Image 1 (cartoon, rainbow, N blue to C red):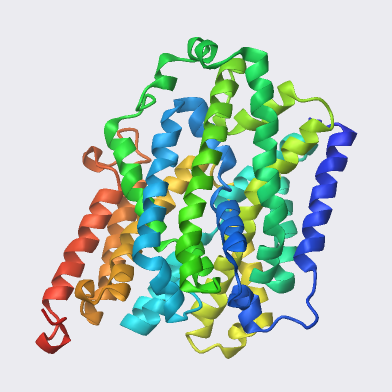
Image 2 (image 1 turned 30 degrees about the horizontal axis):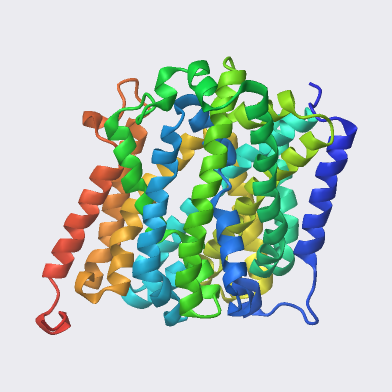
Length: 464
C-alpha cells in the first residue's frame, strides 16, 4: 500500500514531529523533581491552563469526524453540548476545591477520604479511563494513510513516539508541547473548511447534498441514545485530566476561570469539525468508514504542502490527548497502584517512567482490538462515570459522603453492572431491556451511596 502524502507533505509532518520532540525534551536548568514531573511545579498560568486543557480534551478528532459524517449536525448536541455542561459543572463544583486541597492525583482524594481499597479501585478506574486506546487508533489511521504502513505498526510506532518525549520530563513535557499542538489543531481546520465551502457552496447547497437526517436534531439516532451521552458526559466530573490541570494551576482562581474560557474554545472547535464532517459527507458520500472523513477530505481538496499542514494539525490534535492520557495512565499504574501497595521504587521518577512503558503496552493492545473510536468512548465513559461519580461527590461535599465501608463495594457493584450492560450491547438485539449502560450503572451507584449515607454514625453526619 502506498501512502497518500507527497514528499513535501511528509517534510511538513516531519518538521512538526521534530519540533514536538524538541519541545518535549527541553530541559530546565536543573533536572525534574517529583513536583515538576507530576504537576509542572503547580505553576500553570491562565493561558497555559487553557491551552493545555483544550488541546488535551479535543484529541478525538477522527471520532468527531466519524460521528459528524454519519449523523451530521447532531454531533454538536451529542459530543459537544453535554461536555460543555459537564465542564461548567466541574468549574462550579470542583475546580477551586480541587486546587485548594493540594492533592497530586484523583486517586489521592479517594485514598485520603475513604481508605486503601476505595483508592486502589479508583486508581484502576482512572487507569482504564485514561488509557488512550481510542486516540492511538486515530493516530494509527492517520499514519497508515500518510505512509502506507500497516495500521498495527502505525499504532505501535505512534505510541512509542509519544512515550519517548513525555518520559523526558513528565507533565512538564506535556505542557511544553501544548502551545504548538493548540495552534495546529485550530489552524488545520481553519485551512480546510473554507476550501470545502468554496468547492461545494454555502449551507444551503450543503443541506441539499447530504441526507436529510444530517440536519436533524437526532441525526438518525434514537432519543435514548442521545440523552445517554448527557449522562456519559458526567464523566467530565471525574475526568483525571481536569483534576490534574486544576492541581497544577498556580491558584484556585486560575483553575475556575480557565475552565470557563476553555468551554468557549470547545464550542468553536466543535463548530469547525462538525461542518467539516458535513462537507466530507457531501463531497465523499461513499467512504467505507466515517473515521476516514477528515483525512479523506483533506486529501481530496488540498495541494501538496497544505495537505501536510492539515495532517500535522490532525496529528497534533490527537497527540495532544495521547500524551496527556498516557501520562495519567502511567502514573496510575506506578504511583497510585504499585506505590500505594508498598512498592516504594514505583514512586520515584524512574518507577513512574516504567509505569508509562507498561501503560503504553496496554493501550496499544486495546487500540488493536477495536475499529470504532466512538464505541471505545461510549464503553469506557459509561463504566467510569458509574464507578467514580458518587465517591468524588462525597470527597468535596460531606453531606453526600457515604460511610467508608460502603464505598469500595459500591464501586465494584456499579462498575460490574455498567460493564455488563456495555457488553450486552454487543448482542444483535442491543443492550439488555434496550437501556443504555450508563443508566443502570449510575442508579446502582446512587443506591449504594444512599445506603452508605444513611448508615453513617450520627456524629459523622453534617450539622443541620
